[in-house]
Amino acid sequence: MDLDALAFGAHADDVELACGGTLIALASLGYKTGVVALTQGEMATRGSVEIRAQEFKDSAEIMGLAAHQMLDIPDGRVEVTWENKIKIIKILRVYKPRIVFAPYWVERHPDHEQTSHLVRHAAYLAGLKKLETGDSPFRPNKVIFYQSRFEFTPSFIVDISESHEQKMKAVRAYRSQFFSKGQTGSENEETTIGRPEFLDRLDSRDRHWGGKIGVKYGEPFLVREAIKLKDPVAFFGPEYLWTMP
Image: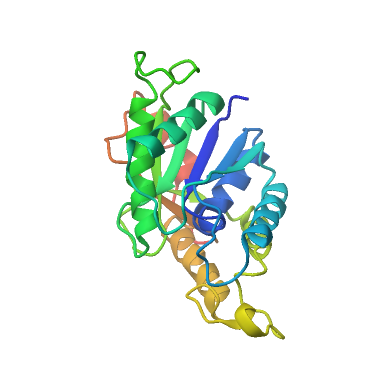
């Protein structure tokens, strides 16, 4: 299956929180989208491997993904090794995504930082003809980085106003990870995303970035290279005019 966009995260729910609205918006435009979680989340404070796998599946259905997959890289030990590069290269050569989303390389969680470097390295190496994996060489058109904890000056912001509600449904599919009244035992252990106010903060963050482009909700992205345009007049058409939401 050839995908138009494929997003990588260290753990299930990383992608949904950071760029789920964008993937949903792309799917609504007819693009084929996918998500790959590098680990199975076995080190997570809340939820078991089995629970998180089911939540990952439920979220994928809500987002309208054409493909979703969990790899077996050890949670808490995502490292830029040749073995892990090959795993990502094989994924890229199978799905052939036109664009790839990866986490911003400055992060609180080491797994997130390493995922950023790992995906970027693999995206280049996947295009080498003499690197044999049993699949044809392939290189995505662009690796695009999404924001998690630390902000950056974005290269562009995607308007997710029409897909934000569905994004939040996909996020809430991870019931084990977020606060819910009546939780007991390990389900009630406090984590950064398990705090009662976390989902409100996520909504506020998306509102903040939407406000930057004059819409209700937005998600920011960063590319390392300059963006090439042949016709800036056409590119910056009337739809790019900044207006108050």
